[in-house]
Structure formats: C-alpha cells, structure tokens
Length: 250
Picture 1 (cartoon, rainbow, N blue to C red):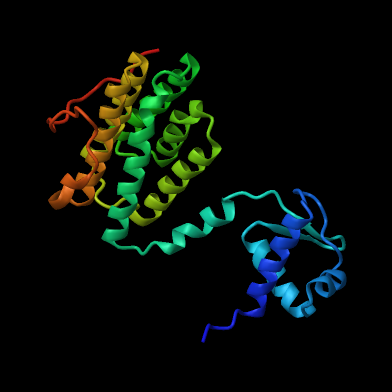
Picture 2 (picture 1 turned 45 degrees about the vertical axis):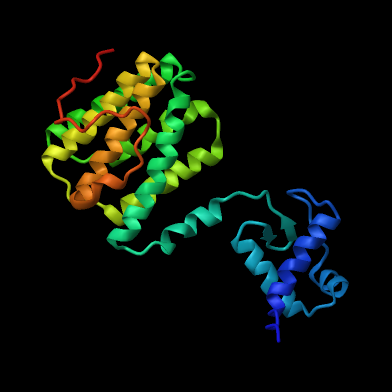
C-alpha cells in the first residue's frame, strides 16, 4: 500500500498548482489564509505548514500584516543549504573539486574571446595582490574568490556566477588552510598570474591549460597519492616543475 502523503506536502503541491493555474507572478498576493484553505479543502494548520516550507525554499513570502505573496524564485535558499550536505571528509572534498574542475575548465575557454581590457586589468591587479601576500606568507582568500568570480563575469550568466561562488565557498569551508605552506601559497598565486597571461594572449587552449594546472596543484595538495583523476583538457601538457612567474606590469 502506498505511503500516505503528509498534509503539509499536499499543501505545498496544492499551493504551487494554485499559483500556476492562476498565472500568479512574483509580487502577486495569494488569497487570505481562510479563503485559501477553504478553496483547497484543507485545514489552516496544514496550509500554514505548507506555506512555511515554501517560504524556506524561496517560493512564497509572508509579509507581516499584509499576507502571503509569490516570491521571485532564486536558487539562493538551495545554495545556502548545500554546504550542510557535504561531510567534512576527504571524499567530499575530492567530489566537490572534481565538479568544480569540470565546471571551470569546461567554460574558461569561452572567456578568452569575451574578456575586456578592463576585466584583464582587474584580474591582473588581483593576481598581483595574491603574489605580494604569498611572498609574506599571507593567505588571500578574498582575492582568490573575487578572481574566479571576475573571470567568468563576461559570460553574463548569473547562475554560473552563483555556482562558482558556491563551489569556492563550500570548498573553502571544508578544506580551510589544510596543507597550505609558503611554497604552495606562492604556487597558487603564480597559477593565477598564468591565467591572466593566457587571457591577455586571447588563447582559449592556453587558458584552459592554465586553469587545469591550477586545479591540478590543488588536487595534488589535497591528496598527492591520487592526483591523476582530475579531468585533463585536450592537448594538455605534462606536469612540469613549478616556475616563478612575475606579475604582469600594468
């Protein structure tokens, strides 16, 4: 026998169906609680529970003294709760890094033909700041996050920007400063300099290789024993000893 659907789940389904049937748009109000419960043939208590759940996922908005309104949907509530679905263990880090690598390596080549001189200058400044901090043993999380967000901005894809920010933030929470040394701080900073150099050259393949090298270094730091399972782009070069690159001078 099929399991009985909880009343609050039925309320969620009914409310969403009501919104669709009446073609309600973000900002439109729903009927009063009493009227809505009557129309849907359910108790007010079940309706309230359904409303609270839909509020939590960003579909509805309850305004004190005004009523219930349809909210413009975003993925923010999902993104905000996603970090809690990851366990703080090595496998979660590997899984997350694999997805982040595929996402960024797969799209970074598109940036090569769309980056503006102003964007390159902004990325250059961030990379230079990373190098300066690395040389004194300082971490540069803010610059790192801003670099990756700025890099994909020309694609004009808010969902991508949110994903990049999410993956970066979740990885930071799980990984923290694990394995960070003065050497790999400098190496990470120089990886970003290499990305700027490739972007300035306008070469999509070079840019993809530079991003691959960056993630390969992270993977090796995370787990040197199984660093070979990162996605490798076409025509990627074999691993070479790290070389110091100087920040691009403006």
